[in-house]
Image (cartoon, rainbow, N blue to C red; front, side, top):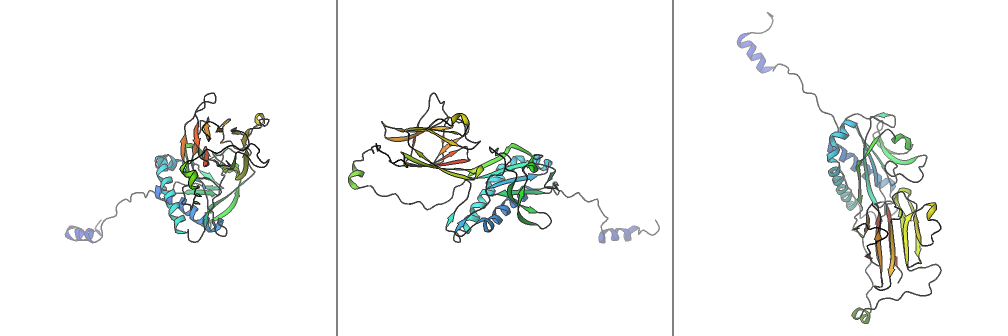
Length: 336
């Protein structure tokens, strides 16, 4: 004790070298900004890797894996993070529009699913970690495809190299991750596209429009309308010719196979039945009615649900995009 300075000398020593204080532990848990940055990095990195020629491709499906404690803490901020991520995606796309002539994603929406887990892919998930798994489309958790493949092709940042790498992931890898339904978000694409200008109608027809007649003798390869559809979780496209005045859109099941006027869609996201499309002879227009508890949209407009026994019909434009449960896209084109 005799070696310690006392009096004014001790005070001067404390002034020049303040006594040590216990340090406050640094909070290293993942922040909202960190989650956002990882999402944006996964999206931006995918553009040069996935794009081909003049067509821009990019990751549209994302799984965000957090430590369970961080998941609980950040859950209320997930919608804001998703909104900010999509805004960043649009900014990135706009900045690269000169390089690519067209935007050609293989999905119809951005899909985000958050989950909590303590381990993923052989790596421990710590509170400071944010693991983002990205894919063009069809990441399994929450998609419930008809048949689960043995592996799914994804990209993720490898911890050892800190680089994004393409890899096959066994679907069982996700089984211990708690993907809760409140942590799932779907945001439909809203790109600025150059639409083809409609042809001008003849002056006489414009002045006195006449409703078109239904052709009585249709070619075997044509119909009243053509429906090109895309199934997001299977990355599958198909074409359906509407030859009947009324058709039913339903999930592809054995019990539906014998109905000739059914458009059968191989997707767990399509209800049974999901909707009906008809040509109204009296009004000379196409109409649609939705029966699904999941949403049906026509050109971004939500169509309310009705009962199959009492359908509520809504006018269907001659050219329209019909979105079933945010996962199956129908491109409707009248031939009349």
